[in-house]
Amino acid sequence: MDAGRSPTAGKPIRCRAAVAREPGEPLAIEEVMVDPPMPHEVRIRIICTSLCHSDITFWKMKDPPAYFPRIFGHEAVGIVESIGENVDEVTEGDVVIPTFMSDCGDCADCKSKKSNLCSKLPFKVSPWMPRYETSRFKDINGEVLYHFLFVSSFIEYTVVDVAHVTKIDPAIPPNRACLIGCGVSTGVGAAWRTANVEAGSTVAIIGLGSIGLAVAEGARLCGAARIIGVDVNPDKFEIGKKFGVTDFVNAGNSDNKSLSQVINEMTGGGADYCFECVGLASLVHEAYASCRKGWGKTVVLGVDKPGSQLTFSSFDVLHSGKSLMGSLFGGLKAKSDIPILLRRYVDKELRLDEFVTHEVGFEDINKAFELLIEGKCLRCVIWMGK
Image (cartoon, rainbow, N blue to C red; front, top):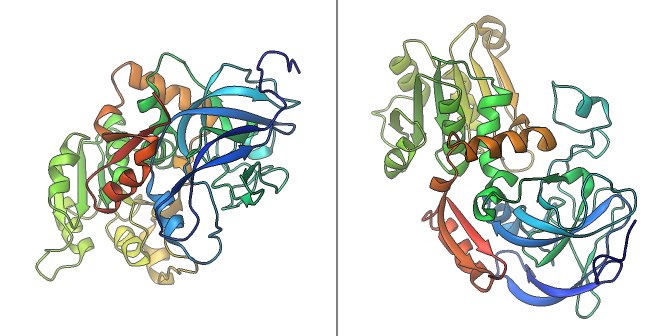
């Protein structure tokens, strides 16, 4: 390892972070200490990061897997400041996207085309680094600060395991590339990789937040003929049209019919693919019931509260021939699929610009939280320092 190139390599870095001290309380911008990377780890200077709904879900949460004080953020782009031992796929100065899902390239899952669920560094909602179960952050008094989803990007410098880092083309604008770190990838990937949406097919999407709109974008890229968007907010139809939504169902106003009745009537027997992007068991059931018999696929992307259960009648499962599947990070393998998505953006196929509705400086990070909670934005990009 050539430690001579970065003057800060091998030393702790003092920098600013937006620290969540208490559940639901505004983040405090503080001076913190960031340790150098351990073997298989990379220290990254964050250029910009965007706010995802998962950050808000865990920021509000009071019991484990909630941990405080914590540094949130997991959709970002940065520049490698220094590398630990045994890191050979990136080097100082590389532009990278950190991801919450690992891609070790070594285990049976990572070597297979069928799965993106790495078994060497499996996904979990952990407050630590994945290999060592320790933190790289301390506040100025020496108190440990917890990590979030193996990324923690609401900080000027973070440390990420190399299995969670994908090198990208530095020419791509960072305020667009950061979206590929989670939300847009999850939605586009769910249509493209998990469901494998066929050209000419019919798709129903329950919940038109950023993830649902990204599913629509993915379905549009796959050539779906009809994309039905479902939401309680009628304003979402105008937004959805930009991403290929062709029909809209107002979930709060369906004349005493269930959602699945409405979709089954619209489609003459159900959609080929249904995506649940809200995170409610009742809506997973509606999505499954909205799917066509024989070949319908229901894909679950929404994160429900811990302990939530799904209940299906054995008769329905046997007689309907449908499939139900989950999709973490859209079934994408970060290191091979992220460059494909970014190339499709450069080639003006994949729409990323339309997802960014707001941009703020790091000092205004709490404003980003307000905008997302009030439903006034899709993605708010936070610049670490222009």
